[in-house]
Image: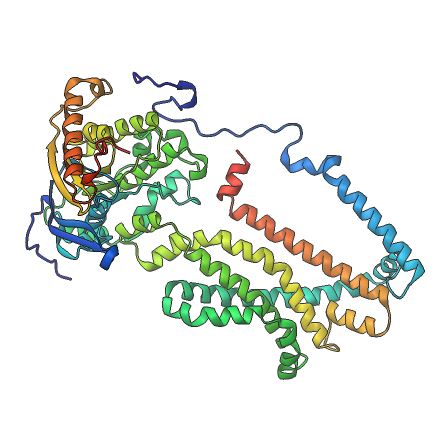
Length: 288
Length: 291
């Protein structure tokens, strides 16, 4: 090129194709395996050991405050099938409730984002309902629907409903004006716009909601089970029965199961998110 | 559906008659366009230049059917802008590349073909419309220097490459007119000049009508057959300059005397427009230099 520039080193000087950013090589281990490094896991390990010691001291001095860690382990080991089947019962409620809440809130989110009238009518109610503690609604639902699965599913669905509704309806409207103009001049129909542009744009918002809602579904299921003790099964029922019998080790064993379940769900949804949103700026730049 | 027969204008030009566009009211009243008349012949490359807020983007959006004039008419080759959009006669390249981040480059440039599939049928019924075969997208991408980027995501591309993909996307629908709204304003000078060259290459082959909004004088001179100079408050066209430089226009020509002559002519027009401006005219600021 014949043009002279005062600072040639700072300007990309390839006339035909500027080079795309190449993946930067990382120092030492690849990022995927970085958790092997002591710097990565040592702080957590130290804290865990410290907390374990504190727990054990408390359990030895006042066994009604906390059960010994060994007792929890024994409870789990003595009857793993019991915990597994109850965990499965809770998980089933959580996932079915989540699915119901997801479908309902997604449809409503599309409606609300496409029709301003619907948005003005529905969103204020949604916001008020979303700040109402569902723990308070659960007993009322048990009175209304009995001890069957219905109140549990309703509570779980409701608890999942609003994060998805609010995030997805925001996401569907997050498309940049320039993109909308391009598709408007192509005379894309509303349905095409929704399918090809708005829904993919809403995906990052959807996953933000799902990361909240997956673990939340378990909370919903347990809250419902606590409100309806005596019903079939579930870790919530296990907790309420065991605590009324002063069997603290069993209570904590059930809590331990719930914590594991919640973490697994979070792990699964994060893994799915990584695959689906591989195109998202945050991920693309991370692999550069 | 019956085809609306145009009252004015012909199938061979884009014509705007007495367009008025006013935003706001009272003290915030802003006349974006005041009695603007424009005629752009088929196959012409026309640039619209002027200071910020002179209504050049409004004019472009009027042709694109994204905005409606308060009075006056706009016609794109004999039909209304809306109808032109319905027939996919308009390709838009906005200031930001506006690519879909979840689609790779090929997916993005193929996107227009996936929406509004009825357009082809409608196109054939519009009088004077030129039938063209569907372009080979990979070929177009090659010509735009995007051979290696075909399967890359927008976030993996530089700004210049993203804008090229946006241009290919617009050319890909074989539009009767390409509307470009300051498409290179966010790019550095080198990238800008190389893209200008590629745009001219592709344009030479297709001879698509182009309406190009810019605030760079040299860009306007280099690319255009005709440059419309606009002035602000109220937005109006103050001059029309025919650029008679031969084509193809190489990098060398940028330094030629003729090239500078046209640049000076347009700068003069811009300056005159600025001085005549009823509001800002009192302040003798050198206004010709593009931002």
